[in-house]
Length: 556
Image (cartoon, rainbow, N blue to C red; front, side, top):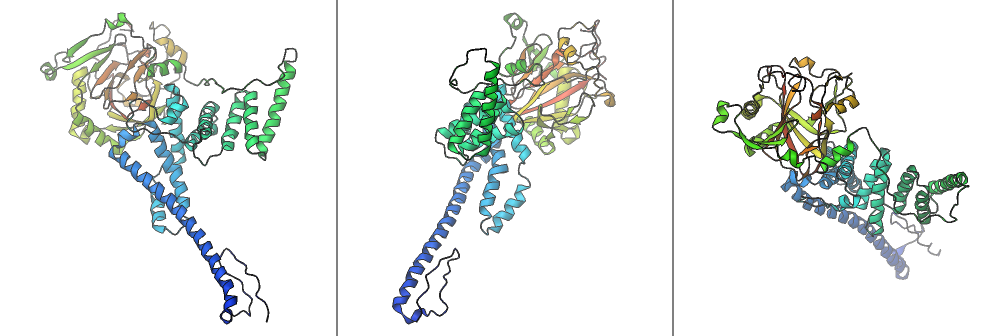
């Protein structure tokens, strides 16, 4: 009789037996089967543990999402008012749910996968996640927030606090890196590394973080720190080819620098490298610093002398019959140019109705290209807007009529009521509401120094096709309070006006001569915390010739 061949176990849990074996003929021989079965059970348990681990991960995710969505759906706008919540929502739907999908696809849960596949077509895209990350960086810059503050969610007026993980910070850094923005790459990779060093559990490795960080630091010309970070990377992964190549390249550059400065005393040891503080690069906006300072409430030129010229009064629209008995409260916000605020312009019920009408029509707000006159989206205007006609609902006609009564200007030639909702970090950088004409060098107005600098002589008449002339005035309704940020600022003369629900601000964009008042260049600051809703009416020149007659000079 031939002996049993050795048992060989495969991943399929089958055994290969000798062809001539008969197990039932020998109990002693069958004992080997006992051990074989034991091994099969062990393999089965390992399979079950693997499945349970996966199911546990899915269950944990589901429970976390259940708690989170219960909180977020109870007050969607309040929840999304915190920019970190908004960013993480976009990131989850674009990235995290995709990772969960890959995990679940390992099983035959066709129902969930089908539903997820259908729903994913409505999920945010990569572009959305990038936009959300840039919005956080915009808030970081405008309000001078360090990455630690944003990562920990320590923002004023927040109701639902949230924080960023190592993975989130790493994602922010990668977004900046892919955009060639090494300034923010350094800031966010440093924050990711800091949280990693503190022991936060993450799937992102220090090697990945150091790889991006060292190169971004190098882009700022900080060779010593780039070398230190690269050496740290190599100490963690000595087989990292790119790091080794980069280190040799950095050493050669440093040697060349030493040769150039050979006539000076050079330290024999490298200086201690500390966390680098790199300057934020300049950009296209000439008044960036002034604009952002005003957004923070800094640099407002409200002097005691100017304050004395500002008053509150009841406004009856030059004895308009509708306002004589029920005048509006009017408050001066600025003296020159004259900007006023009206109180209780819209009721809560009217505001909710306007928002309800506008929401289905909201689309990405556009700007008019100053060279071509074509409407296009732009990174410096982050909001969605819609236009409401009086036929949409009686409340629109009612609000339009009220603005006409307050201003004394006709709405017949005005534009439709525009409703805007500012999204995450929503803003509209400094701009004019009126169409610029060739600059008149003889016009003696302090505010025109900015117009001279920006030079709008080649800009087409944006409103020529309307046949109603230029935008003579702006009436801006604030339809929500904003917990932090979101001010309307005027960089040329240093004014900042903060949103108050139910109030409206009004100013003239043109002098009585029809010349543009370049001092009215203004901006909507990024919303730091909150959800900002506004509506506005732009009044045009035609039809208002006798309601606002020409002055005796160009700057009356």
